[in-house]
Image (cartoon, rainbow over all chains, first blue to last red; front, side, top):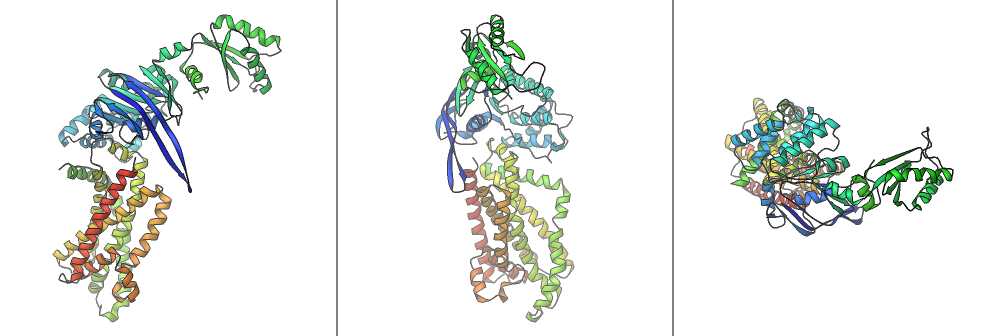
Length: 326
Length: 254
């Protein structure tokens, strides 16, 4: 449904007389199958939005090519526009308009006559349950209501593929769950969904397949469970804050503890995240006693130890050396 | 034709936002009515030596000037609206649909044209009550020219907005542009009594041509060459400006 090859975009940023080049996207490839929820996971500034805007015909790639729903992005952007929907991060509605007016306008922008547009708006109001507020000014909507309207606008013409840029950014947990429900419903209706997110939970729970993007490059790709399986074994997290206190551990203690534990044969890799040590081991159950023994033998008292399955953050950490959390 | 339909669609949407909030329509009248009420007496007194003796005479000179001044100033503010729409993502939302790019811009410009025409009509009615007499056909022609001027000034504003991309610089630039353009168009005091060199400079100002043409029309001198010359110049420049800004829009907004 969506296929991209070597997409690349460099911005020229002017600051005074100097122009600096910012390589926002440095050649990304991916393919999204029909009826799939595909996610781009990455921190802010990773190139997610730029990639999305290229695919939605809003900006022209410097190089590379893409085919979306059978139409060539560079040669036939008009046809691409007809076949896709796009929901930007900023909603794109005037606060003094109403949901219904904008739905009708949106449908008409796709060239349908007024009566058809009104019927489509009515259908969207039902499908996304906007009836309670469809005729109120958009400025009075809650964040979740406004976001639901945004998505309703994006799919008013029943596109084959829909691009969602951070669909749940800034939403409270119930609204987020609601949005996930809507996205799954669209997928079940046969739509292909391409979304960006910087929420691990969202990528994990909602997406059938994800690409992890960082610094304008894709660093990993697969289903969330495949990616996590790549990090074999368990993750042991050692909280180095002294027991019973809120105090931050000394830097020297942190360094020493990491050096000691990284030297142990059962620890594959280790990372320092704030006041915690993250250790990748084969089995958490057998590692924990050894960790305690090693630390105690050197006069270090860990605050807490936790063992869990690898998460997408661990995948991100392993690929980029940084954590996506916080 | 698709382009016309798209222009109409965007125009309709933008215009209905205005109509739904009539307070903006009312506020828009304060300034022109103030000028009409407080400035015309000065003009009448100043120009008494040139044979302007009644309010009707003074309005014939001043109402066209007011039209140009309004067309110029409020048109130059259009860039603010474009920047706001860009920032709120409204423009992007349009651009991902198959709607014509020209429609996105021209639909907005037409909204400004209609808005200005509405102000002009109210002013004409008010001035008529105080003694302005103008032939309906000449008035209609003046309105058409006013429309062209608004297309021109909004295009200029869009160009600046697209280049600088922030309200502050836009404000500074449009203000420093509007002042000389309106002075050199003889908006307040007719260029006819200006020194020769000022008139020479004004030859290059399309708004000056429009003012002179409209004043001739208001005086009932439709046969004066300045009428067709002014109409031609302002139409040609406006069309060129619209083309330029829509090209700039397709290039810059990406």
